[in-house]
Image (cartoon, rainbow, N blue to C red):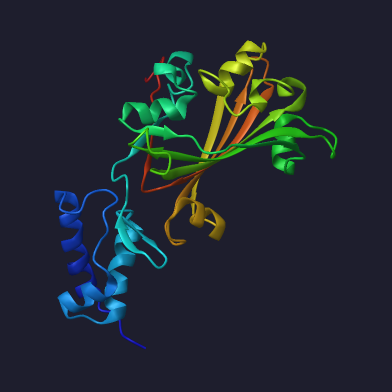
Length: 267
């Protein structure tokens, strides 16, 4: 079994990283193959592979089986403004269909719409409890989607998945409404809940870091040893009824979270 050479791995990875940061290799560009890197640097095959694994863990490269390694399409951070993103003006800014699209627009990125899996089913016990579904057979509406960003609005094949999201809504509120349609309209589902007489007044979110499942890693095109954020979102009305439960899976190398509070008394 070939021995790993940490010193060489770090040095060569740093050299490739510098070329990426300088723009010599741009977002989406193909990087040298393992065999080319092995030959150019005079290193073992396993060492060359470890170089690319190091870049993948940092989020600056990804590998497609049988096609090689490439620079990550997006090298920056998407800021999720936990304080202001759900304000009506923010989530419909520029005609956006929700807060996520508005966040991408501010970065000059395009929300590349992918098919949304919409249906009715019995949710998991924690979701059912949050939505107040007392009977074990009660169903709710779900919306599952791979949320994709890109730069070229005219090319439907261009882009990259930046998060996985599944939202659940009470059937007695959202059944037969625009929430069960692929396009929920300006402002997204929260605007439609407001239209239905259930405006969201409270949001509670919990965030944990963990490693992705094999299916999540494949969908996000990341290695299984790169951590993701699992964000659980509860949106409720003024009287405390939860009208949306959402689970978001987000690569830690792409996302950052920002929050702002006004304090009445800091004494």
